[in-house]
Amino acid sequence: MYEMIHTTIRQQAQTKTEIHRHIELVRQFFEWLFFESETKGMPEGIVGFSQENNLTTQEQQFLTITLPVLVKFYTKETLYDLTKELEYWTEQLPTLIIYTPVSFENDQLKTLAEWTQHELGPESCIEMKLKPELIAGAACAWNNTYQDFSLFADKTSIRTVLYQLWKSRTQTSHANQ
Image (cartoon, rainbow, N blue to C red; front, side):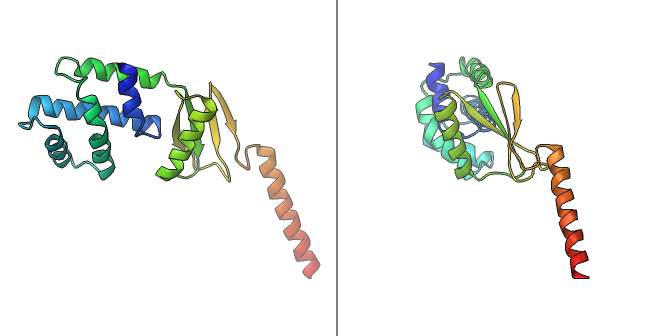
């Protein structure tokens, strides 16, 4: 049961952070439905919850797609145990952490997530971290091993490139005199 719920939630997420957000949204929705709302129907409930909580279009879409599958598993009694179990399950996922100097668009994240699941296994996921000091590349962490694939990963490379630039400019300015 947990695996099916987790898979359903995961299908709409590209990163581990999004998986956590989706689990949180599901919990918040069912809390609202069970304890606060007068609405007891699913479509009306999603609309009401979305309006009360100012959800984004993407979040509304996630709930609309996911909740009809999940509603049979969630009750007042199971809500918090399910949430706790799903959070634990998510933390256990093998995660490729990708450090980049810029943010990625959703379609790019989707491509990365699909590649990761294909190459590293269907249970794997990605986590994106901004690292502005990376130049012309990215760094990754997998299984507690960090690899820097940016252009200037090696400090001696930076010195060499800067020295070569300085040298070429110096030679060019002397040649022009």
